[in-house]
Length: 248
Image (tube, rainbow, N blue to C red; front, side):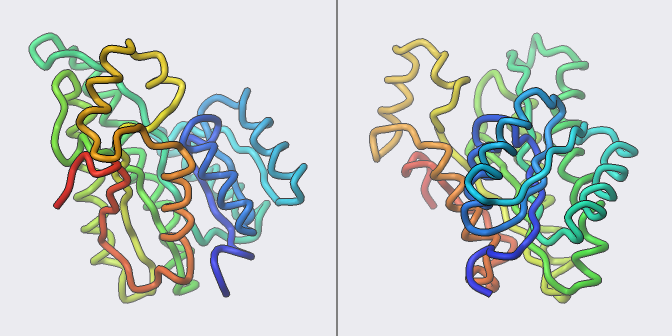
C-alpha cells in the first residue's frame, strides 16, 4: 500500500498550526484522520476542510495529560473509524521563564502535556498496533530538545524527554513491525512565531543556513513520509526539519 492511503491516523493538537497542517496532509494522502485537541472550537473547521475535499475525518476533544480521558477517546476513535494505525503526538505547550524564576506549576504543566501526554497516547495506541503487527508513531519534538534554549528549561527538557522516549519505545516494539520516530522542527512560521518582534525574528533567521523559517507544511510532509509504507526501515530516528540550524 503506497503512502498513507487507506490508513487511520490520530493527530493530537490538530486544531491549529503544525497539527492542523499534519491532519490536512495525511488526509490529502488518503488517510482517515481523527483530529484531536483540548479545545473543540477550531477542530470542526479542520474536519470540515478535510471532508469538503472528499476526505474522511472526525473531531475528538481530549486532554493528553488526563489518563482516563486519553483511554476513553482512543476507544471512541477505534469505534468510529474502525482501527488506529498512525499516531502523531503533536500536542504541546510552552510556559517560558528563566529557570531562576520558573514556577513549579509551569514546569509541571509543560512536562505533563509535552512528555507525559506523549507517553499516555503512545501507551493507549500500542495494544492495537502490536496486535495488528503494523503501526507508525511520530512524535513532534523540537530543536530545543537537542540544543537547549534559554528561558525554556521546561520546554527543552520535555522535548529532550520525547526524544529519549521515542528511542526506547522504538526498541520495544520493533519486532511487532511498529516504527517510532521523532521530528525535531526548528524555527517554523506559525501564529506564535509571527508575533515575535521583528528584530528577534531576523536574529534567528541569521542562525538558519537556508535563511528563512520553515512552514508547517514542511513538518507535515516529513510526518506523512515517516507514516508511510515507504519508511518501513526507519525507526528510532530523529528527523531534523530545521533549515540547517542544527546539523550532525
